[in-house]
Amino acid sequence: MSTLSLPPGLARVMAATTLVVLSFSLLNPVLAVRLQTAGASSTAIGLFATLPFVAIAALVPLVPGLFRRIGVGRAYRLGLLLELLACLGYLLTDHFGLWCALGLMAGLGAAAAWNATEALIAHNVPATHRGRLTGLYQTLLGAGMALGPFLPALAGLDAREANALAAACLAVALALALQPAVLHLKAMHDTHAHMGLWSACRLAPSLVWAAVVGGVFEVGLGSVTVAHGSGLGLTLAAAASIAGALGMGSFLLQYPTGWLADRLPVQRLFGIASAGLFASALMLSQAPGWPALFWICAALWGAVGGALYTLSMIRVAHDFAHTSALAGTSAMIAGYTAGGAVGPLVSGWMIDHHGVLGQSGWLALLAASLWWMRPAQPDAGGADDPAPSRG
Image 1 (cartoon, rainbow, N blue to C red):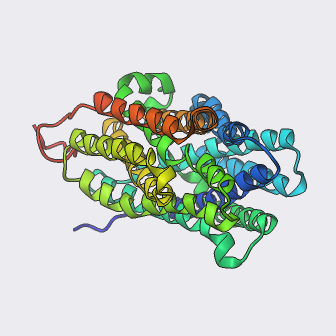
Image 2: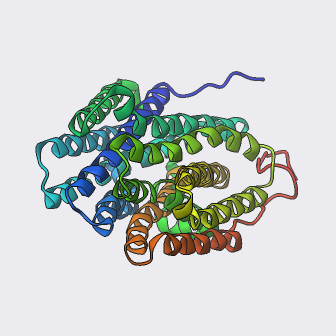
């Protein structure tokens, strides 16, 4: 097997983004519990959790132009700086309106950093290693997502100390990104630099929908579920551990997903994911009588929702290999963030007005829609490797 060679600076970007996800997963449950203990409703908490994703979705169409104007590396650094400033802002105020503004700022920063990382991986990793390296990278993100919610309990942190630790993670990530090699990274072919987001969406609508569903389940349910657990009387550590179960599920399934994507038809994998999410939605309806199901369902949401995102990015790397990886990954991120935005808002409303049964019902419908919209298999049998020699 040939040695995998990556551009200088890409490993630093991957490490820095892993720290960003660790900070995100540590901070969000803490903020949700702070809001819940201050008397905020599930709907308000869901609205706050939605705002960063609204900002990401709003900026994603502008990302290709931003990258062309200032470069991928500079845009990545700017994104990390905005996220760090927002995280520090939560330490300085408890005002809900200001928190909403900071959430929007964090979302703008995440849009730049997230798009940059995914596009760089899709553009620079050889086809022979796409599934496994993408799976490995998503495993690192899953590890960060899994570890973050447990840190308050493991380190004995109160809410403000946890907030400060999240800011420290972002500061280290920004320091990693200051290496000069980061400025020389590319994420698109020059001849396709002007391919737009909407063109990419039209080319791969089923993948975009899979990303939407993945966003709802992997990141759109954590804060509301944690807040619901806190409302049932769980401590900060216990409630945050629900989000930890979600992150642990994501961590465990990412590399296996990438490995399978190098070997099995994409349509089959998306079908299995749909069935897994549908089963988790049905299990959630029984959680009031068996609270342990909250953790079991969260683990399944993280595992399968994360797998959907990974599969979408792997498929995009294949489908957009000779055009613009940036446009393709931007389309997936737009879908994923739309799911991340819709998930907490609809879930908060459902829990407030229809309880766990309403939440279970709408998630089951969403999982079923993935079956009907699952991407078609482009190759006859085997994995989705578009090797030039095939045909």
